[in-house]
Image (tube, rainbow, N blue to C red; front, side):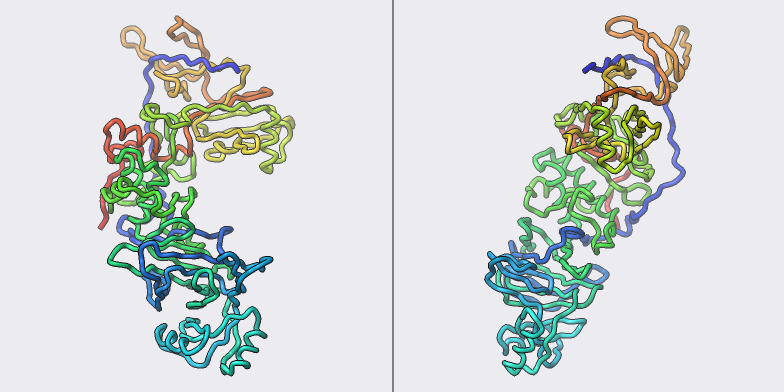
Length: 563
């Protein structure tokens, strides 16, 4: 492989002013609209659950109720059981202490979805519970705002009818709607409660405090603060949502998005970004019934397992503080490492955010990011296969035309096949079109270049190899008598290098590359928008504060609390 030859020269550059006609903040709330309780989707979409267990870590049982439109918990009843399971009102089979909605080869019990609804209605959970105590296997049920008592759990209407007649219950065999949620003692078929108020609401379960300590609940191996909501949005499995105070939410993000052993000022910067990102994206996933998810689609949130005294201290030290621009919450995007420069938001996503302007980042190079340099060689056949595998009906790719931003990051890739047809991928799409897990070849960030092994590889740079010249028309030379002249966008210039004088050609625009193979080399990990996490670490190592870090990566912002 022929390596690039970097020529470092010292020249005067023209400074270009970038003007913005407006600030578009789709989905962002003003600082006056801060929401203290956020709704975080834990299981949803294709990952809904037929059943979901809860266990007290710190607490003494659970309360049942529902959340209103103001995110307030409305109490209905409670249990002293410390291990409970919420499930869809379905025939659920118990095997090895777990619940299955399909009959396994062997099972120890069944939670049937047919019951006998006994005569009478009641005024509260307590009244219904007292009435249920007079019967075997009876429980309170809250159906469409009315308190009932149901007895037994059966796998069919006929079984429920037979039980009603045999025991002389005088009730009505029934099953609830497709939105009903059943609560059992975990690992058993003992029903504690049923909740069915239709599609517009879901069951809320909140841990009961113990000794005035803040409750923590085990769910799927993670410890969470706050309460839980269960929705059957499709009438099938459970969407699970964590209702949690925004500060506890941030404590569940920081040690997952950033190593909790990193410098405290970096952790504070991460806390500010996480809190502001949450506040600026309330309702992002409202079609699922929550604000934000717990994945990298939003922010990684997994409760308190990895939280440390230091990471929680970083959150507490910045509690109530947000990153603001012109009185609005910023959309505080962040990424692992930028490889030398971040990027203007509109060159990666769609929205031009005045506070997310690309910055040259010399701090990152002082730490080991693990992705400071990476390179892959693709054959033309491999690129053709990648495009075809991703659904593009192309012939053999014969050339690639890349374009770059002023910060030196990829902006677009145009692929041309042997029939003369073109496919152009821009912005974030350009960064991932060549990503192939099958070939184990990846473009990890927006910061990469593409070249042919047979090309000259000469690149014009300022001061270092990361600061490549993308627009030669902005270059100026100082001559005798302080004469200043533009180098122009094209032509040939002579530069003084460590090896002496050397002639190089410069040209504006982009060059079309045509070859049997292409070298893709870059640095960084992520989308290059907003704060670099490794850059924050590097700045903190050098003694910068979290305010310094935030104001370096987010242009023209202020940091403060809200009223």
